[in-house]
Structures are given as structure tokens and as C-alpha cells.
Image (cartoon, rainbow, N blue to C red):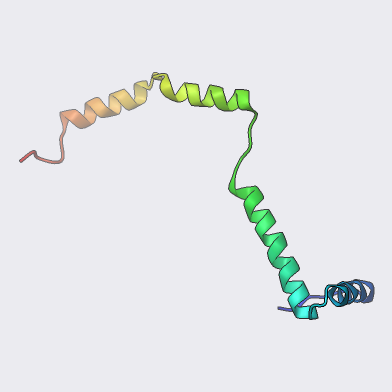
Length: 85
């Protein structure tokens, strides 16, 4: 992996690696992995207010009208594709 750095960026990263008693490569890899883990963790879940979550969960227990789905089910029942054994 390569990166384009300004001289100032390179000096700062080299100084930080030296202060951490790490090789430059190890320092950069560790920093990149930590940032990657943070970003993946942030995007892996969605946080919503408790009241919104409660309404969402409650709505899953309430039957909803789905006339299009009911029509499709009736049509499919009228023309079964799989014969019962």
C-alpha cells in the first residue's frame, strides 16, 4: 500500500511512530485498522430513539391491510403449480 503525504504529514506520522516505539509501517497499519474498525462498527447498526423503536416494534404485531398481496394469494391458489402428493 502506498500513500502520498506532504512532508509535514510524513514528519508528524514518523514522530508519532517514534513516540509510540513502533515502526512506521506498524504504526500506520495499526492506525488504519483502528479507523476501519470504527467506521465498520458505526455503519453496522442503526441507532434510533427509544420511542421510535417501540412504535416500530409495536407495528410488527398489528396486522396490516395488504389487498394486493391478498389478491395475489387468491390468484396463486386458483392456479396451483405444485401438486400435493
